[in-house]
Image (tube, rainbow, N blue to C red):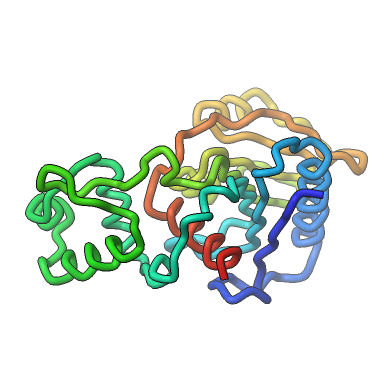
Length: 241
């Protein structure tokens, strides 16, 4: 059996309390479906899954986040990695995107004071995340920098499609794939399909006690924001205790 870690309001992370009712029951059924599917079809023993329910990401709380990650990428974690805060991850992501940047450029581009940058640089060096190369800060190991191979977010709604779309759009900021899940008996019409397709958001439908993939989501490259890194750090702190 593959390793699956589940994070919810009983975990030591910031989540929103779940409201009991039909929507939560739908969420729980879908989580069980995805767990069974992962355990049945995942053949790579290095890949594990983490499941988040109502995790706070910036100002939103996605209903479900399914994360697949390579355990080997966490082998070189040290204690200092656990000390990184969200500000550190924002600067780290900027360094990753620029693939080489100086202190003065960080200050000018991010609008962060020099003392904050120096404190972050010190923590990132201690965590062995960055190195100095030709007077520029760079990621130590870009190939293995990001352990996560997939971030799939799901917004669930009872008997409707459109009302979950706004939140699903917000999830595009940090996800590789975004979906809306509904148990409506009606198939989505062409107007709804085109709207989802244009946004790259997929659709799952529960029907006759089965979950059907109505439309596959567009795959986005990750990490696509510092929030993608936040998710990775939560997993790392859990498995690297």
